[in-house]
Image (cartoon, rainbow, N blue to C red; front, side):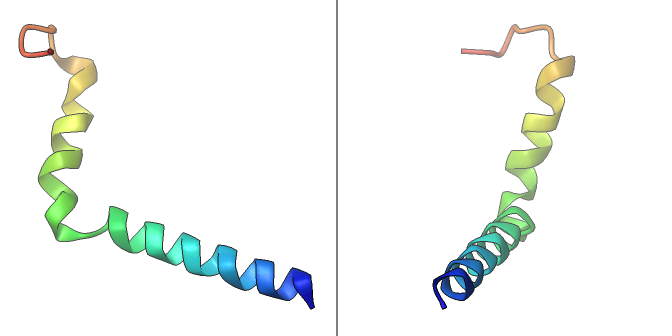
Length: 45
């Protein structure tokens, strides 16, 4: 019984994280983060 509840909660958390990561509002933020390893550090804080 408890394992089923925990599994369900973890599945809901996973789906929420997946939806957050694939949200169109996050695209620009993730593209900027993807370019960080290639930057020369001039615009880094």
